Length: 86
Image (cartoon, rainbow, N blue to C red; front, side, top):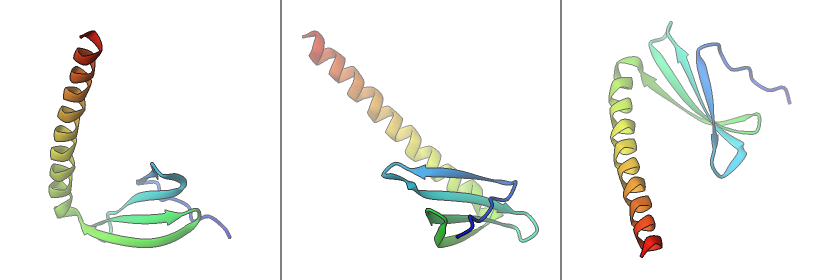
């Protein structure tokens, strides 16, 4: 099977569980969409089309999650250091 090439305006993110699983993000400016697609090896298993004007809301949700996760990770590290020192 021939791999599907990624458009020039996109990115691939590998799944933490397996490098054979990936998320592709591709911009389709002509359609006003960003397409999120799930891949297993060279096979697309699903897509989600998001209107470009909704992308800022998605970014806000991801940023809020990142901020919260980062804070939790810092607190865990700090607690681990304190328990190791004690």
